Amino acid sequence: MNIKLLLTIAKSLLLARWRQTLVAAIGVTFSITMFITLLSFMSGLNDLLDGLILNRTAHIKLFNEIKATKDQPIDLSDKFKSSYHFIHSIKPSNARQEIYNNGAILKALHSDNRVKGIAPKIIAQVFYNVGAIDITGVINGIDVEAENKLFFFNDYVTAGNYIDLLNVPNSIILGKGAAEKMLANIGDVIQITTPKGDRIQLKVVGFFQSGLVELDKVQSYCSLTTTQKLLGKSSNYITDIQVKLNDMTTAPILAKEYANTFGIDAEDIQTANSQFETGSSIRTLISYAVGITLLIVAGFGIYNILNMMIYEKMDSIAILKATGFSGKDVNTIFVVIALSIGFFGGLVGLLFGFGLSSLIDQIPFNTASLPTIKTYPINYNPKFYTIGITFSLITTYFAGLFPARKASKIDPVVIIRGK
Image (cartoon, rainbow, N blue to C red; front, side, top):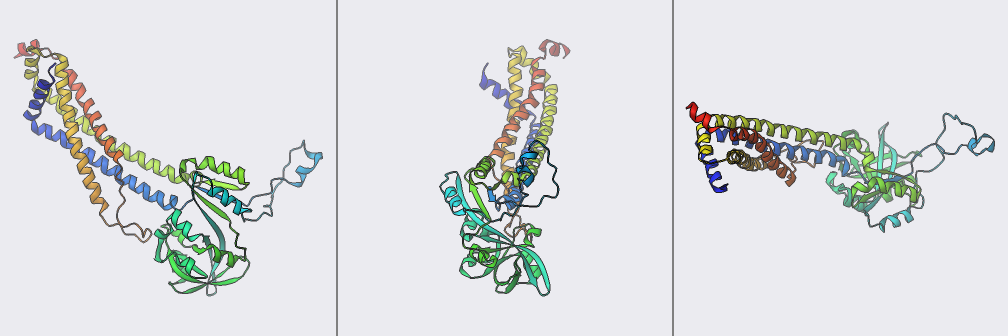
């Protein structure tokens, strides 16, 4: 088998019917272009939607959950040990939400090389006082610098400076929705009521917008010191410890380990946000399904074109076989034709896909609910381009394989006798 000669023949057949070749290549190019564009956009959208939650969520949250007392008085009686106990309306235990011995826990976490960072937090239920009306709210007492480092806090502060929570005593960054309810501006002093009934004044130093409207209507942020002060607690009072890991996938295992080690409740990010992971998986699956469908459709186009080419080139195929070319040689020629269409059409499709993705990436995307997003999200993952060209070659190979087998089985005597 003379490979160079077979490639020359394949090239001649391609150029002899260049219009059909061009149509087939355009079909592949269009499919790959849309495949790359669709996956890049959908993956970027997944990253955006997940980022709204996952970037603001700890990989592991340590806290004390309010729950019913595990051991009831009847369980302590030897008389009823062999009996089934049916107890209704059990009230929560008298345990506090504060994390006990949090200093030792923080020290242990800091020394764990699996932990990327730690951010202590206090969650306080309050009322925003607007004249005679009380609006339910939540103040998050945060370690400002740790919160910004681990959870990109500054990216969501749309007005003011996040560091003012440290520099300005008794200050607060209001959720955008809460600020609009209270008609509050930066520099204003608002009044809140704590669960104990104490009224405290706080100075507004900024606005926070997470992109989740209902969340922004109730949530606000203060420093740990300010929150401890308004709750009347000591300087070591915290209700949550947020843990960021070097490897997020280990969160479920480590959450159980920390819960057992420290004797507190632990919730991992996979459990807390399982619905978002499910949504991302479904959107990605749909994107791949649509893209592969486009490639298969293009493959049928190539199949039809090669079938027509074989029908029109019966004489040429007969002459090739009559002059000593084997069925395997003829099969190779038509497979090379199909792969050439797939390769060059796919290569141009990758370039067009990248160009179209770049164009979408420049389109302004301005929405009040997502102030940090300026253009449509695009993910330029090289994996998409590798998958695109691989499927292009696989699809066109099988599209050319069956016509090629048909051509290789042509009996030159029958064709020449028919002529």
